[in-house]
Amino acid sequence: MSSHQSTLSRRSGSVLSLVLVAAGFVSAACGRGGATAQPQGPPPATGVQILKLENKPIEDASEFIATLRSLRSATVQPEIEGTITQIFVKSGQRVKVGTPLIQVNQAKEQAALSTTEANRAGTEADVTYWRQQSQRMESLVGAGAVSKAEYDQALNSLRTAEARLAALDAQVREGRVQLAYYRVVAPQSGTVGDITVRVGDRVTTSTMITTIDDGEALEAYIQVPLDRTPQIKLGLPVQVVDVEGKVIATNPISFVAPRVDDATQTVLVKSLLRDAPPTVRVLQFVRSRIVWRSVPGLTVPITSVIRIGGQYFCYVAESGPQGALVAKQRPITVGPVAGNDYVVLKGLNVGENLIVSGVQKIGDGAPVRAEAAASEAAPAAPQGK
Image (cartoon, rainbow, N blue to C red; front, side, top):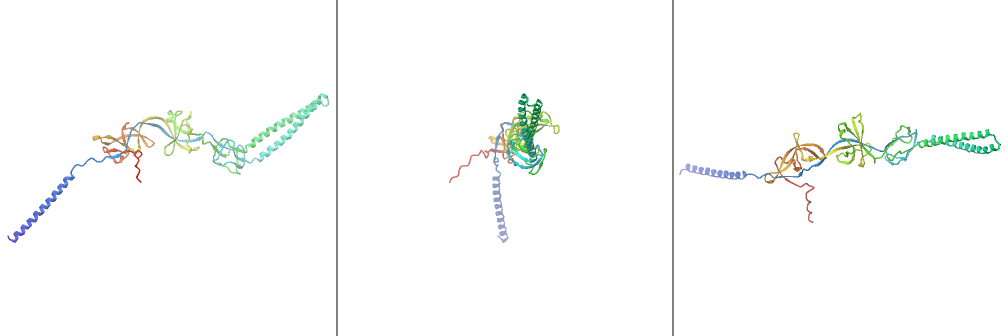
């Protein structure tokens, strides 16, 4: 064999080897491709919490801003004029009826009363003298020792002195009553408000000194629009709610005004707060709700509802193939918010299983499995020491 033929033989052997190696790689690749092409199993079920829907009492209510007023509230003003010499109480102090509040300078009135009392004492002495004279002359007239004219003059002097004494008695009583006005007292029991005057200030009968309110006797004043007036009646519950919407007191309607307020075109409704929370104060604005009626209906947690393009949806758990649970998307119509729930007007029925958690992780037809809520989960076993 020539050298040229030998070289061709070696090259042919190398090409054959490369072809065999390439065929081995293709065969291995086809083997791996066949393994990945096998069909996959169903996706795993998502754990969700499920709530069985039941009818609940749903309140048809309207919310208003109410003003709290005291049934026993007084504005204190003096009945005389003068300069304040003393203040006996402090703002916020609890007082009883007749407790002294302020003292107005009474020196002039006291001096006038003292003069009247002195005049009365002199007149009283005159009455005593002429009474004795009349009695003595009455016996002398019978004996002829004095004339009838002298006796009549003594009687006239007695009657004049008695008239002056009666007039002075009336002046003394009036002076004492007037003098009492210089000490301003509490007209009722309650809590003293802001005292707007100071010692040395001059007051008149139009000066407001302070206010006294009894916070234990409150009434809610509610202005109800005319379109709701046909539904107003005594005894309807009025709920006072806090800033979070939680009901803190419930009392019935105790008064409905017989006429409309011509300025606001509303009707005044009052509710006596027999059950009043300790945090409220006189003239405070509070949120209130008048409950017109209570009817059975369905509610769903706000967190279980999703909104897509203006339409509200929720998911219910239904039985799928082989008894597995699947999520079914359901369009619903919602009404007003009641606490942390939506009132459902249409789209759900009593007895259906509502999915209340994980709604953002599932889709229509997705497999799900029921999980217990965190509060219902079994407590963890204690760890060994």
